[in-house]
Image (tube, rainbow, N blue to C red; front, side, top):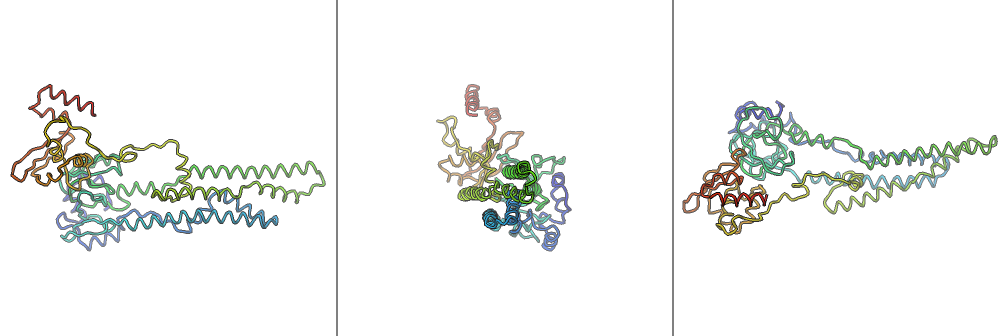
Length: 451
């Protein structure tokens, strides 16, 4: 039953539902749904949960801590119990601070996960019901509306256009048009999958119904999330500590050999090899900066505390140093370092019809819950927003990349119908027979300067 997500794009929606033992009208049988939930597991990406003892052991993986533990044993062996005790205290403080910070961060993430328990509307046994998104299974018929988070990979079953925000997967902030039309060839990637909704994306505008074709770790988003969260990479900070520990070890070995040979060369036959060895080891242990891990951990904990006040959870203390060491940060501008919020700047002609902005807003695929940045900008700039409620949509032709425009037929309370067309300037100007060449030139120059 686990097929490639893209393969469903070339199948008819009814065929997909039938192959999954479901129905577009009645949905999935409740008994079958329970069996599939037991078989495939919940609709969530179950990553390995970090246990408290794993976090504790993680604190001892630092080569420097291993070096200090070695120093403790040497100090006890030499009879320097006070020195050994002090080093042991340093190790304990460092371990406690690191463990406490990382343990609390993991607990905070668990609490956040409990609060984010999304619900989804499904059709089962012919009736609509709301269930937890994690209970979705293959073949479930899902009903989605504007603003809904897509809970799984879904094959759209209706041919009416909807707008979908896929920025979480593609990085593109502009919503894309999708519908349930069967594709003639199998899509190669997310961009070509015009009749498939992917888990984690958002319905920017419209209402649709679809069939769940992949859940949990088998979704496109689940596979990406699993790769990014389970990939292990040694941080630059940890590499630096490892190099420093290696340097200290080499220094100790060189010190031991040099002091040992120098004493033998100076004292000759009267030198006592046993005493020389103990002296050399004691001298080497004194070279180790025992307080360094404590100072480092305290500094990183302070940084993590500052980030926590900014509502940032630090799972790994060394990440604070990694973040501070960034020299060049490459980001996608829109929606990352900008707000992805559009604002109306100017209208041409400025002294033209007062209802120009109003009809431009109506021409958009706009509802109160619309997430399209362009339509939101128009609505915010509109002073008489309540006038929108005086019109009803009779028919809508969604934006088509080939036509480069969309149109909507609206009717007011008096029964008067108005056709509004909105799109690319060059297309609209070509259709505007009431404009002379001089007016068209003015519009083109204005568009070029504003663009």
